[in-house]
Structure formats: structure tokens, C-alpha cells
Amino acid sequence: MHKIFDCTQVRIIASKEFRDRIRNLWVLSVAVIFSLFALAIAYFGSAQQGSVGFRGVDVTIASLVSLVIYLVPLIALILGYDAIVGERERGSMELLLSMPITRFEILLGKYLGLAAALAVSTVAGFGAALLPLASQLGVNDMYHYLGFVFSAILMGMAFLSLSLLVSVLASDRMRASGVAIGLWFFFVLIFDLVLTGALVVSKGNLSSGLFGALLMLNPADVFRLLNIFSSEQVQNMYGLATVMPDRLTNPLVLSAIMLGWIVVPFLVARWRFK
Amino acid sequence: MTSVPIQVSNVTKRFGDAQVLNDVSLSVAQGEMFGLIGHNGAGKSTLFKLMLGLIPVSGGSIRLHDTPIHGHDFRQVRRRIGYLPESFVTYDNLTGLEVLRLFADLKQVPRSNCDAILKRVGLSEAAGRRVRAYSKGMRQRLGFAQVLLGNPDLIFLDEPTNGLDAEGIHDFYRILREVQSEGATIVITSHILAEIQERVDRLVILNSGRVAAQGTLTELRANMVLPSVINISLHPGYGQQVHATLSNLEGLEMHHGEDVARISCPPSEKMAVLQMLSTMAHAVRDISIHEPSLEDLFLGYGGQHA
Image (cartoon, rainbow over all chains, first blue to last red; front, top):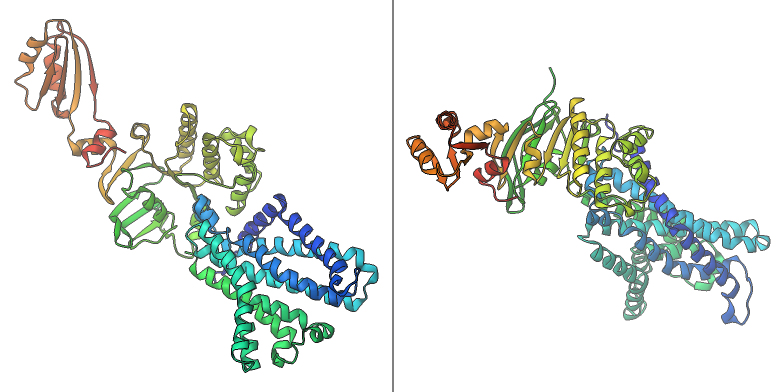
């Protein structure tokens, strides 16, 4: 019986990628960015309502979600687009492939290493932001905040998976970076715009089932829904609860769909990595 | 019975419409140093990549130690392979030692071997420096160090002396001879034909994706029947006399000036020429004989300047 992959080889590649990001201060920089934004939002997030200061976890999370939905996909796409095409273009891939390692092990190792870098910087960044607020938070708040950080990591992993696919398919780094940025524009800016447009054009006649299904085609929207439906207060704020079919408000279902966004692009990348 | 280290049988490789290799067969014996020569685009690097299993063949088969490189056992075969690509590019942000450790891990060779290997290739002092700061020659040494990990018994070297200075080349072949004497089988390409002709046991000349010739240098010379060239330096005034004496030998071309003569003759006529010359010892100041070089053979077998 032959194993699908050798864990040792995957771990070697993963730890190299991870150490690279620690060493070039990527993890630290992203963590600092996250925690500065989180703190700023926690204190000034409700400035529009005429006050500053911490107003509670649910409101803060709602604001953070809007920020993270822009930032995390961008960071994940930038993190991953170079992984394969970069080594191919520089010439180091040939030697790597001549080693006793399969393409799948290289791909999985790179994915896990980069995902770990992204996860560590997200946890560290949002974790550090939590420290000044810790005394004001109850267990339930912590639970929500943890859910938010976890879902942000999941969304990051989905976009990392997409960027790895781009990296496998692209013929050169320039094109890979172009497509990665294009994906960001599409999923973060254009997708919702088009969906809103469709709602308006159909004069709101788009069935909630179809609307919900369309939202599932965008990992950023899945992330948004995950955070909205984890808190009733936020749900009411968005007024979305009435639109969404029940099935798609279940965090477990949403998480499973997010998992699909992680696994499917990765499997396509594996299939195309020749 | 020992296995054949490298067996290439009727291999064809197409990239789209382009036929890069056509019916290439060769076998390399245990402990041999085997040269692969051909002009740019002849298919050398493609053949290397096929032998390493980096790209699939379009037809034919390749077996290393009787094992197909693509099968489930490839990992076992790969552990026994050392490969130096034509341009050794690696991770510039790591130090030389870190790069070597990474490859040691992948080959499952104890990290403790790395220091000794770096010393062997003359990189001990630079081991802690980032590869970014390495010269071309130092990078190539690091590439060679990576080849030596785990005492491979199959070594593929694509233009290995690229970027090395004279001392580096000398060191490189010294280590290579040591490795060969330990039983390793080596396949090497070089565009500096003079450099490998003294070193390879056998070689193959690739021309437009086909094997133009294969064998030892002596065999290739014999098949090609390239002339041996005898240069004679004469005492002044003997040119005409020497020409007259030798003119009845067959297959002989002679150019002569006042005090030099240059004779091209088939190798089989060489002794006859020398015997004739010995009867005119008074006329001859010095003699040197040039056998056809690999370069001459290469050109003779349809190659262009590499």
C-alpha cells in the first residue's frame, strides 16, 4: 500500500515557507497592521454615532468584519500568488522536483506553511488588540471574538487556496500578480455590486434561495454571513435575517461551505500542477 | 548481478509539434563517467529532465537501476540521485548551510553530514552567509555540495563547471574522481569539449535530437576516420626533399613551407609516415602528432560549434 503523501516531506516544505515569513518579518508586519486596525476600530468605530470609546464586542466585530473583508483576502492573495510560479520563474523548482518529493507534497507543504503564517499573524494581531479590552469582556464576548478570528482565518485560507491555484496556472509572476489582484477586485468589490444590481433590476423578486446560493459563490460573503449570524444583535443591525434561507444561517453549514472554498481550489491546483 | 544504472530505450520526446528527441537509446554502466554532448538545442537538457523523471517521455522508456522513474518506487531511486541543473538557482534568503540542510532533510540525510560536505567543496567559511551574497562560483560549489548529499550512486551534472574558475574546475574534477572511485555512475554535459574529453569513459553525441555517435573516444575516432596530423619542423632548405620522399604514400596531404611541414594522414598510415621520416633524421628538427580532438569528432558527426 502506497501512501498518498509523505508527511515528513510536507512538513519540511511547510516549515521552510513558515520560517521564511517569520524571518522576513511578514508575520510581524501583518500582525501589527491587524492589531492597529482592530484597536482603532474598537475605539473609534462608533465615532459616526458621535462618541468614541469601546462600545461592546458585537459592534466592534461588525466593524472589524467590514475591514477584514477587504484586508484578509488581499493579504492572502499576495501571500500565495508567487508560491509556485515564483520558484518556476527563478529556476529553483527544477531542483526541488528532482528531490524525493512529489508535486502534491510540494503544493500541500507550501499551502500549509503559508496558511500557518497567515493564521499566526491573524491570531497574534487580533489577540494583541484584545489585551487592552480584556477586562471589559465577558465569556460570551470572548466566544464571539474567537469565532470572528477563526472565521477570518478560514476566509484567508480560502483566498490562499485561490492564489495557489493562480500560481500553478500562471505562466509568469507578472500575470499571476495581475490575476490575484483581479480576483480581489472581483470577490471583494464587484461581486456584491453585481448582486445588488441584480436585486434592484429584479425589483427584489430574486428568490431568497437563489440570492443565498449566489452569496455562497463568494468566500468573502460566506465570511460576512458567518459573523452576522453568530450574533443576534448584529443580525438585527444588518436586517439580513429576513432575506436569508434558514439553512444558510447555520454557522456549521457556512463553515462547511468555506471549507469547500479551501479544498476545491487546492484540488484543482493539484490537478493542474504538472 | 548488478543492475544497469541507466537504461534509455528508444526514447522520443515531443513538445507540441516539435520533435526534441527521436529514438534515443543509450545505456550507462556502473561506475562509468558518461559524457553527453551536442550543440544548443540538441536535446541534452531535455534528456536529463527525462532521465530524472521531471517530464514524461512521449515514447520509449527509461529505467534507472531497473526501476521506472515515474512509478511508485521513484522515491527510492531519487534518494540515490544527485542532480546539478544547468543553472543552479536556490533560495537566496537562506545561508549556504541552511540550503544544504533543507535538501538534506528532503533526501533524509542526517544534517550532521552538511558541514563535512561544505568543507569538501570549499565552502566552510561561507556556510553562514546568505546565498544572496555568493559569487557565481560559490553558488556552483553549493550546487555541487547538494549533489553529494547522501553519497548518491547516480550523478547527473548539466554544465557543472559553468562559472567556476580554473582552481574551482580542478577541485570539482578531483572530487568527482573520488566519488567515481567510490562507485558512483556519472552523466555529465559540458560545452567545453576539451574539458570532458580527457575525463569521460564513454560518450554520446546528440545531433538534432538523435544519437549521432556513441562509444569511447577511441571508438568514435576509429569510426569517424579523422586524420591524424603530424607537424614537422625542418631544418632550413629540406622542404622539397621531404615532400618528394613522402609523396608516394597514399591518403597523405602535405602542406609545406621552407622549414615546416604539416601532414594529414589516416591513423593507419601514421607509422609508415614516421618510418619514412626516420630515414631523413638529418632534415627533421622536431615532430608533434595531434590526434583528432572531441571537438573535431563533434564537428565530424554533424555538430555545430557548441
